[in-house]
Length: 158
Image 1: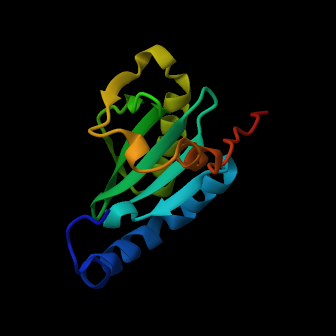
Image 2: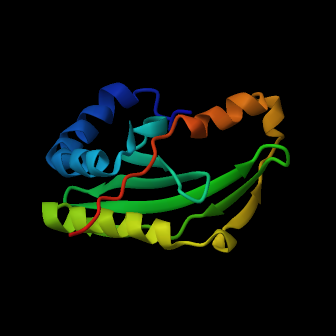
């Protein structure tokens, strides 16, 4: 689903690519260390999303969104979906603004991942889908999106 700008690839994308090129070494390394799937500019948006299979179930996500030339917003979320009831159980706190200096950014990403992993299932809120998911795809197709996510890696500290 695009963001609404039909000229995204000509107007927005080159600026976003130049911005993310400055911080991509940190983002790429973070993704490799933790075995995260990267989605660049989902829905033609100004962010990269890092997705993983949450150890308790569902999907964890960290979004890194361009805020301005010197900072980003980090958005966290964890969701577990129930296909049969078309209900999503979700936690999605307010974003945090962070500078793009490499050490600050890397620490913020590690803290974000640690925060998601500390959340408990009973902290998730219930959100009903506006229409039954069965109208969009089969149960097997629906859950395959989660099966294809990578298993999270947490390196052991010495």
